[in-house]
Image (cartoon, rainbow over the protein chains, first blue to last red):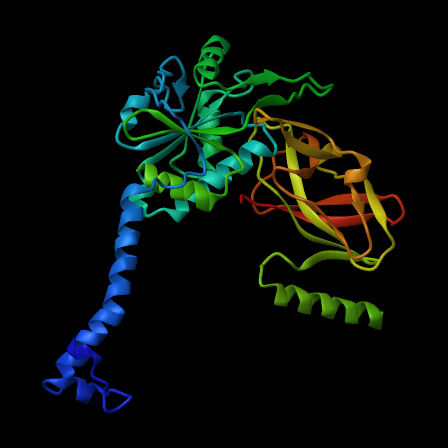
Length: 224
Length: 152
């Protein structure tokens, strides 16, 4: 090994490095000393990127299935809710209601914040649909108007009680109308989940509505 | 008076050093300060809205929030949002022991937790407008704070 020859000077200036002979030797030493660890780190990083899954913040469905049809619900443009229209994109379903004072508006604000963290191209491929489980007070147009106060691309839908019962059962969500107050108002108790449908149309992820926008954005980006 | 001015200047300085745009005290009364009081705009369908704020006990004796009122709400009650083990959410009136504010401490009313529930909204809250909420405490006199309507 020629590289064991001690250098005559402790410091190497760029001029010396360019000098023929000695420069080449130094180059080899530098390549070994610096290059090997950098290559190793790079290899590990590439390996991790390729073979380790993204640490999803949402609950990952172990056996993802096709998102059940919700065509018996009506969207804010008066059409049946057609989830297949967004195949190739991510759809987030959220069961709530517009007169919900705390959890629902906070949820919609969180998803809107997560979308703002994505690139425009990614954000355009994320579609949130809030399904109101309170058809006594909400019609599809009202739900649409409400969710668009958080993000102009959010969509609203609802339907008759039988359709909502079926939809919540299919998506393992719970809702129940609370007792009616003297002023006619009532609370709707509901599951605080965001349901993530992947571009392939499968239900892939389940988030709690309190998920941090940064974590939700990272999951959405990975799903896309 | 001079003391009050000095206190105001101190609070303003503290607010500026905080870095956020909403840390300035909206009102300071006898050692109690209200910071960042806000509520979201309400849709026509809503009878209720959650009002959020931070109540700071800067140098008053230990106390407790007991009630609140507003000309814009039929009733205002301290509420708590809860999530059960199945992530089903519901609300209930807050317990007295959740509403204490010790000297130097604060009571934070924020989304997905404690909030002031405004029940019986006659006119929807519109972004940009401001209305008053009066807080009542066990020992301290009432504190009236402006609440700003904004979408966050």
